[in-house]
Each structure stands twice: as structure tokens, then as C-alpha cells.
View 1 (cartoon, helix red, strand yellow):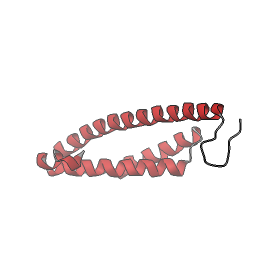
View 2 (tube, rainbow, N blue to C red):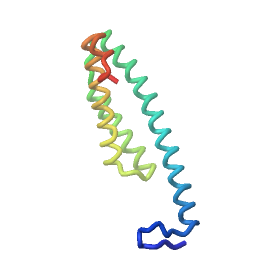
View 3 (cartoon, rainbow, N blue to C red):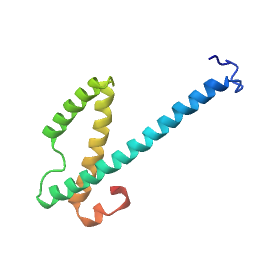
View 4 (cartoon, helix red, strand yellow):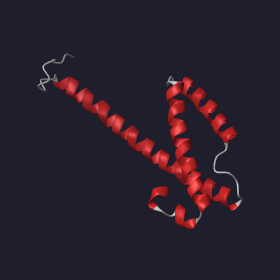
Amino acid sequence: MTTSNTGTGDVDPAVRAELSRLRDSIDNIDAAVVHMLAERFKATQQVGHLKAAHQLPPADPAREARQIARLRGLAEDAKLDPAFAEKFLNFIIAEVIRHHERIAEGPAAADSPAAG
């Protein structure tokens, strides 16, 4: 399979078909990731309400450290860059903490669109 470097779209049909197949797979994986994140945030919202009801702090640094170590190990096993996995989890954790803080502020803050 060869391609042209002219950028004119003069691509071998077999290459174009393989590219399309791979992109379809990526699109399906992206959809699954979004749905998994939605489920994760549903669970973390419940955690936020439980924490708020019992006056627990929005963040739990010890659990976060355990989760990061755990995810780094999973990433290594999956041949994914552990540093990338840690950055990704840190981004999610920061958003979860933000949600928990808003929930702890009370119903008006938790129900606002920014609480997502």
C-alpha cells in the first residue's frame, strides 16, 4: 500500500479503506470513553453528596495518591505512558473535587449548570 505525498487526495483505495476502518474504531472508543466518564461522574456525585451530608472534606489526598499509584501501574501493564495516565487522572480528580465543593456549598450551587 502506497500513498501519494502530493496532498491532493490521490490515495490508494486500500489505504483509504484501512484509514476509515481505523478511524471508525477510534470513534467507537471515544464514545465508550465519554460514556464511561459519565458513569464515573454519576458515582462521584453520589460520593460528593455523602461527603457533604457527613461534613467530610471534598478532597481525600490519601485516596487520590493511592488511585494515582494504582492507575500508573495499570497504565504500565497496558503499555500506556504512566505519566500521561497520571495527568489524565489528576484532571479528573480536580473536576471531581470542584463538584464536591459545589455540592458542599449547598443545593443552589450543586444544581447550577457549572456543577455539571
